[in-house]
Amino acid sequence: MQEPAEGPFVDVAAIMQKLRDQIAERRRRGLITFEESERLERQRFRSYGERGKIDPDLLEALLHPSHDWNLAVDYLVRTRRRPPLSWLILLAKHVVRPFVRLYTDHLLNRQAQINLYVHYFLADTVRDVIRLQIEVAELRDRCERLEAERARG
Image (cartoon, rainbow, N blue to C red; front, side, top):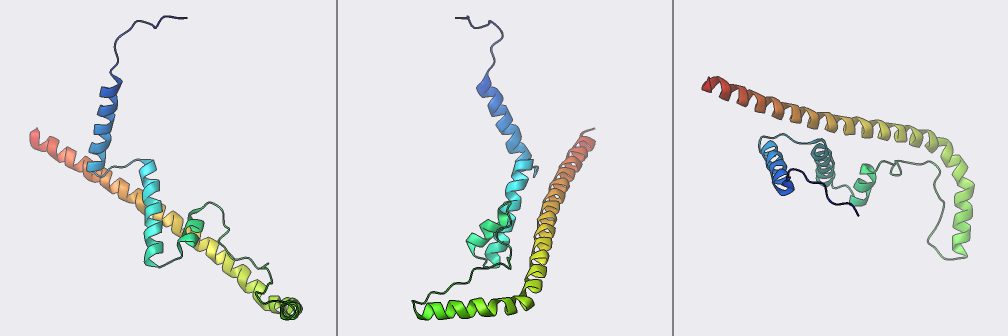
């Protein structure tokens, strides 16, 4: 078994406290990290969803990387009624479905494309606004520091 190497004592607790203090100071000045900006982005999307009274499950689906939330033209045909009436209703739905899809598929496909466009547009816009807010906070902090230096010297 190797003996521990002799060397200068490193106070890990003091280093960690210094880092925490630096982070707290940056937050106090309005400067945030990339991870915090992502958290702000998700918070902002959630607040928009709550204001719009969007179903929380749909909101979580919208925030997920997949696009399972978007429209699909290939839908299931089903009924909640009991046989034998359910068989007749399902048969009628299956007979009518191809004719209905002649009119609806194009519209639903177009709406799905619009949904994706708006989704990406809004996500990028929120991301850009948060990035600009961070830049403004950093510039304000820099101006305050420069003004303080100028007042001292």
